[in-house]
Length: 199
Image 1 (cartoon, rainbow, N blue to C red):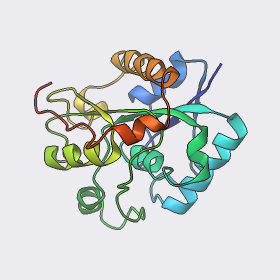
Image 2: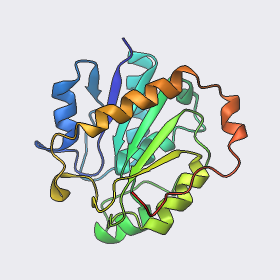
Image 3: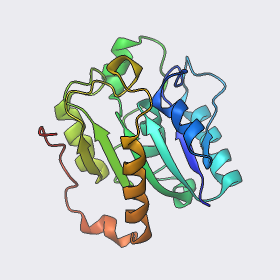
Image 4: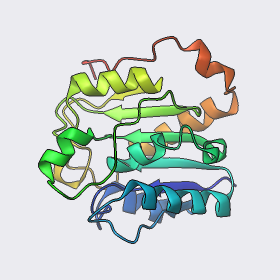
């Protein structure tokens, strides 16, 4: 079976977060553990992700918040070939997140390259970490399929997302996309998909 790598964001995903339930519910899932969840450094986090990918082999990714940017930053690295697909949930905007958590994040710039693996990006209309217009821009840049959960905040514990079973269906959809995916498909997507204001 192909493993699913769980990528939390800043401060990790604490007990009660949907990613923690995912680890309990899916025997094939693995947490990509970071040594420092409070002060993320992109080089260190990327090295850990790539170590796990090499160890586990081809894998799916289920990422939240800053974890989405970590996955996206693999776009131009050799490890991208080991990512079969990525479910990117509530990606954060670095400039916005740095204002909300001053001095905590050392993650460079926002990734802007088209992602060379199949993706589904899930967002909401009122996420304080990613304004709607910015999310729409990055969905186009990354050339990702976009899903709108409506007024769902940052899709975390604070916005009522404990065990989020809807995520399992989205991963199943992603796996179906991956079975028919060809790398040439990326070139055929001219502008990517905008994030619609309608859920």
